[in-house]
Image (cartoon, rainbow, N blue to C red; front, side, top):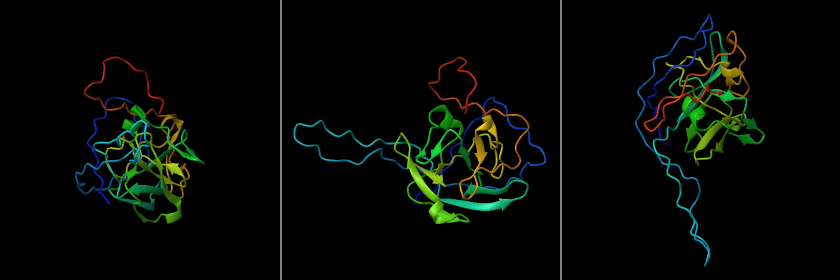
Length: 211
């Protein structure tokens, strides 16, 4: 199983949730391995005579894979799930669990990177039957807990932070069973940070993100 690489991100603008007594104590992350695996959107097949050729599998460059998940209880927040580097993970109310479906794509996925895997990650403190995957539109496999797709948040600057808690009233820290952790909710409804810029991004205001 490939090790995770957390790509560097730039946070530009956007309001961060005010950290109160619920602010977590950040951990010291280990340096992650730099890997670039490939994900396929579909399997190759031999076309029948006269049929159109099957498109080549889609290559997804620079995919960040997660090697392990850890369920644990932390001070102030309670039950959380982190990846093997200590980043707190989230679920999104606009997704669904039955069936598992991910709706966070495009700019949303740049702010809330999906937790991806090339198999079932190593688990600690999480029941094996609670963890599965759902196929994203680009063919990558996103980890689910309790059938809910899970994500990181680029607004968290260090492992152990949970600045994404309550963002847009739809993002919440996920527990080891896949439920929402409703501890340490911020005052008001914080907005997500803006997505990081891309090289070919056009200038202009695209409006406040709704994710």
